[in-house]
Image (cartoon, rainbow, N blue to C red; front, side, top):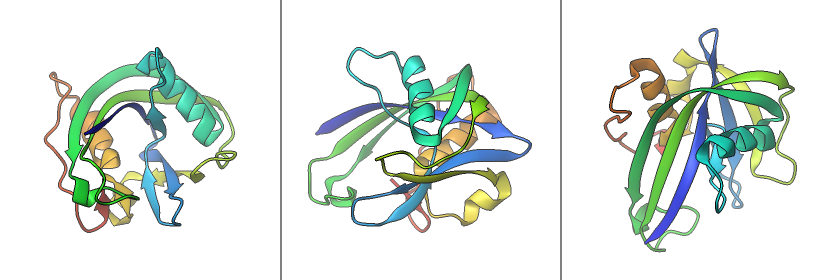
Length: 158
């Protein structure tokens, strides 16, 4: 089984959430939260700020920890390499506020654009399950920092 520790930013302003459009090497596109892998010896708190800057061009500050999500992606459902080993993703979700900068594509990266999206419009987007997890954590602020797994299918992907 492969493993990844990642940090994700849930940025909500005026009923809109900041989403990043990820384009995979094979050209498939889906919306996700700004964020990504925590580097070796990096604190997830620092990683989320770094990832927001790299992916969106914006400066940000962490306002609070929202929660942690752990999910195993079966080998048959892995993209872009179905049939590889099962994969466990542990995501640390933070409520983040944008303090400066300007939205732009990720230079030499897989984020083609970042946009402020009205929260009601999210349901109609092809998106990562991370978006639903982050929005649920932000809406409910569970004392345990845990939400039920999000079913994958239809417009929702791993």
